[in-house]
Length: 446
Image (cartoon, rainbow, N blue to C red; front, side):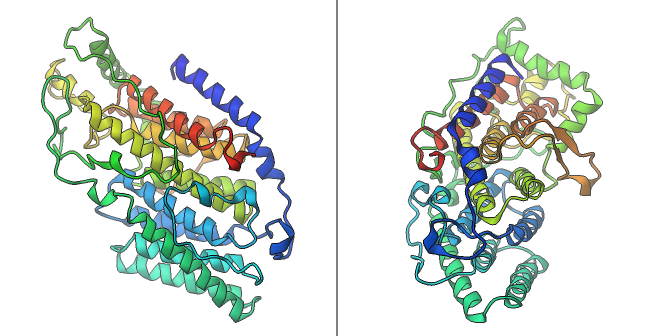
């Protein structure tokens, strides 16, 4: 981590601690009964959300034909549907409806009637996962229906059928509006025909597959949170040069030299954040969120808020990131090392993704997500990430949530697929997105 990024990290942590967000969300009072008129949200455990997170991780892991970064949409819009389904009786501190960029058509809750909020969430999550994973395999589609039905039966053991039915109807109506909104964010045009520019220092398809550029128009997607991407574009990369005394050459040589002397921990770090095959990068962070919620025993409302805002920050950081990638179209390390430095057989530890170098998507999305989690959960102490226990990877432990995001970005240097300045720029970009989301005057931080 460079000195610049370390200072930026410290400034961010100071800002969020002073904002009072963590204190406000931690000590917000909760009552035991659903009483929409008392100004406080009722207390429910996050069990219903936890079960749906587990299933969404499975859906992400098994999905095909979707770009790794594109799963940020699944994360974000599902979280928003869960949060908005809880609108009846929700304390103003948890309400972000006016922050969503262009969301309309949400049903108006009847504040004269009660809702059983876990049933709201159950219906919303079921609808969103069916809609967002239309090509899921038959077993996964059946799992969505099975979980929805099992939870409904659980609710009916303690709640009147009419209440569960009305609550589910509201949750489904919310999810319908959120999904319809999600379909207008321009993601369908992300892979429109594109001709990559050519010339010295510009990106070209990389081995071994030499695939066409992925989602070249992702940077044109509509951000989810208004103003989140304002002034987040980085300045340009280092001037391209083949001179072995130039800053550019030395930058690439650092990747090359590191690759020849990787420690066991650096290799483990790179593999731990590979994410494909695995849960995908957005899925990895969804898993981290789930683990944080379990560790802190966070109730339903705050969990849904963290789900919605963390996914949205990730999504919006990636929009900003891909806008930069295809603005600068910078050459990847493997191309430069083979064609300029002359090592024709060199290969990175991990396969290079099929999009330009600058900036690092892993750094940008990870810091944006970690920043939101740090904002909502504060310093929870040492955290051990067990996401890839199922693959036999040793869990990794971090002193703070921000430290997770820093490592995720840095892992790409050890993987051999990013230059250090690209990681630093992506990290800075992620911090800026979070700053925009939690800037002074945002009602969510008052």
